[in-house]
Each structure stands twice: as C-alpha cells, then as structure tokens.
Length: 117
Length: 117
DNA sequence: CGAGGTGCATCAGTGCCATAATACAGCCAT
DNA sequence: ATGGCTGTATTATGGCACTGATGCACCTCG
Image (cartoon, rainbow over all chains, first blue to last red; front, top):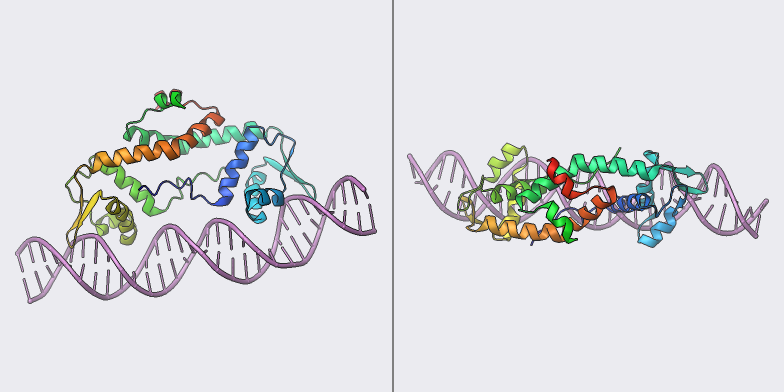
C-alpha cells in the first residue's frame, strides 16, 4: 500500500558503500587489513566490478583506505573511528531531525522503542 | 565529505507526497476539504503540475482522497487516522530496524536524543 | 452557451545507474 | 621472468525513473 522510502530502491553502489562502511566501523574490515578485491566482492555480491570500484572510490577520496598499486586496497589506521565520527555527525545533522519529527507526527516515542528491540 | 543519504536527492514527487501526507495527518488538509489543485500546488512549489499529479495519484489509489471530475480532489473522511496508522506500521516495519541498528553502530542512543530536541 | 477551473492521458526528452568487453599498469610468488 | 593477482581507464549500451509540454474531457458558474 505504501510505496515506501528509498531505503530499498537505493543504487547498488550506495548500498555497497554503506555495507562496507559498517564493516569498517565494526572492525570486520580491520585497520591495516586489505579489503576484498573489486572482482572478489563483485562476484560475492553478484554485482559488477566497476560498481564495487565506484563504492570503494569514495573511501579512497575520503582518505579512509589507501591503494597499493597492483596489490589491493587497505584500511587506513584510525579509519574506523574517523568514519564513525563523520557518519555520526552527518546522521545527527541531516537525518535525525526529519526522523524525529516524523515519529512525533506518527505518535511514536524513540525512547519507548529503544527497549522493545 | 559524506555524499549523504537520499534524503536530499529524493524525487520531487516523493517529497511532495510526504509533505501532503503530513498535512493530512496534521489536519492542515482537513477531511472533506478540497486539496490544492495540481496547478496551484505546482506553482506554489515551483514544480510541474504532472509531478504534483503523480504525488496525488498515490493517495487516490489508497482511497485516501476522492476525485470529482472537473472539480478537484477531496480528502476522504477518516483519511487522517488511517494514513497515520499505515504510515506508522510501515515505519516500524521497514525503517526503524535499520535506523536502530545504525544508531547503535554509531554509538547513539535514541532515548538520550529525545530530550535534546 | 462560453469561460475558466478541474484531473488526466499521451508523447518526448533527459540523466543516472548498471552492465559489459577490453585493455593497461603495477606488484608478487613461483 | 612469467603467470596471476591487484586497481583503473576507456567506450558503448540498455534500462529506468523523473521531468516536462501539449491537448483533451469534464464540471461549475455567470
């Protein structure tokens, strides 16, 4: 009934980006470790290597991963904490206010829902 | 630094849809009242009449507004409550879990943030 | 009846996304 | 040194969603 929010219909490279970011923050892709090659992750996710590369690109631009030519891409030291910090700030600034007012309109209380999870 | 979430780059017709839904729930577009014509709202929002029509379409499909041909579109009785109910359910089912886990990963506590608004 | 309002259908254009097929430059273990 | 692995650049293509312009059918009011 409800055509829903873009959460699902997101572009693949953005979904990958979020997934990778989460993995870095959670330490699944540890600092100093090499993250999966574009071809490997592409095969695993059923996507195109170029699409994966596009997702990786962002982290490279942000200096969170470094490229060793011919070898692979490595997670920079301190990437996890820095990533969490910027993501947190971005979330609070651009997403939370909307979510907050929306929940209020729907008669929902974040504090109450916290316990139910 | 962060290319952000789709919140901003959302299609116009979806932004309009949310805005209209909020107005119905809040009673700004009262039940039984006629909502702005596609052309009027288009002019006001700086959008194309067709885009507005596309936003209206959904509410028509969901039976929340009725069309009187050649006259206008009217908010159905009980639309506000029904809309709030379905939106609430949809939110809890499809958005909240993601948001919840994301905040947890970022080290944020919904309950704490509730007070700061 | 005619003027001006309504929603709506049709057609066309545009841009982003994803994919594909190659090719290239670099590194490393065998 | 060679084969196999890295990331990257290039070009082309198909699909899809969004937006836009025009015209039509309908209603109401004077």
